[in-house]
Image (cartoon, rainbow, N blue to C red; front, side, top):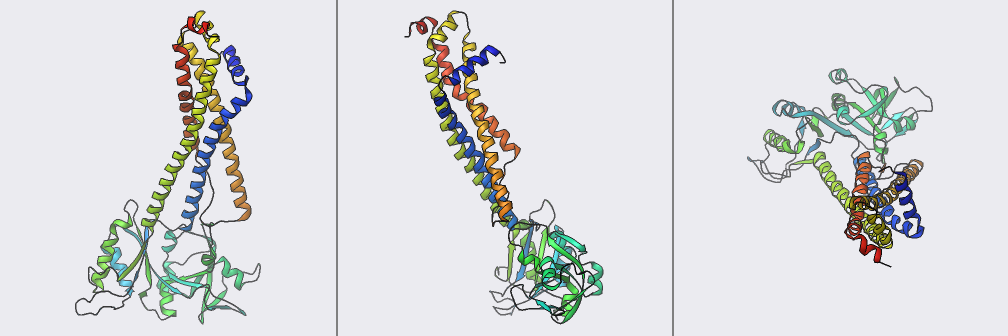
Amino acid sequence: MFNRDRWDEILQALTANKFRTFLTAFGVFWGITILVLLLALTNGLKNGVTADFGNFATNSMFMWTQGTSKPYKGLPKGRYFNYKLDDVAALKSEIPNLKYVSPRNQLGGFQGANNVIRGTKTGAFEIYGDYPEYIKQQPMDILQGRFVSYSDINSKRKVCVIGTDVIKSLYDKDEEVLGSYVKINGVNFMVVGTFKMSNSQGDNEQDANTIYIPFTTFGQAFNRGDRVGWMAITAVDGVPITSIKQQVFDLMKSRHTVAPDDDRAIGHWDLSEQFERINGLFTILTIVGYFVGALVLMSGIIGISNIMLIVVKERTKEIGVRRALGASPWTIKGQILQESLILTILSGMVGISFSAFVIWVLNYLLDMSGPVDSFANPSVSMTVVFTALIILVVSGLLAGLIPANSATKMKPVDALRIE
């Protein structure tokens, strides 16, 4: 394999007609480049769409109430009802596969009317009443202080955790935030923490304009009592929320006298189901990427095979002399296969290197321009690189197989007779 004379012969054979060798190698170069770039772009789309989910636990769903669509037990159609804290306790006790059940309430919106005041500054922000476990469902980086605690819940403390844009809107630069007070709908709250979302992709303006307060304080301060606006529910690891959500619906229907077959009364958004659909879509796109890349690569391989056939024909007399001097068929076949492998692997490695450069440029431009919706960090794993290398080796062998067999089938006497 590492015979210097043989390598000199291979180099001489490949450089005998440089333009032909370049055109042949370009087919493989272009095929492997298309393959790697398609997979990188698919990953970029996947990363971007996944980032749109935020860092929220994907084995989760949101559930809220809607008007009933069927009369039941003397109650009319079109009746509205509300969840209560007792419903949260019932879910936790009667459905053991639930990891977190977080009741939530909301006030205002960052694009609505001003609802928060600090001194002479005002702003419109989203106010959420939450329990401490919500931070485990929606991870966030606590920049200063802390998140709401069960001590806050039990004591109904008027404390809050504010987002980065709230600080920009209500505070001067370098002004101390912790321990200060903001007035939410006329009620004073002390700031005990600041946060930003862990996920940095996409538009986080809404998250940064958010204020969290204890759920019980929310109910008391804004006359909501124990009513629950909606719930964020996460299943335990290994149990898809999709498989147990019907148990959740059935329990809520029985507790609120809703017809068992009334599918409209309870609204929900299954994050796990949506996430699985997206994963399935990108699995198909990855397969398509491999398929298209393989087809383009195959055209390059066929080109190499054709060129190697021409090379074998041009070197018919040389092969005849070698056979007459005692060279075995495997020696001839090995040299042809080596030439094919070298041409394929070299052109393929140049293609991989070029693809890596293009991917680096894409990431550099994304870093310079800032986050782009539904597209982030185009990349390929080392598995893809190793797969590409295996494809190159196999392709090189296949490309040289037919010419090599053609060379070994030729009898020495016949080869020497050819002009």
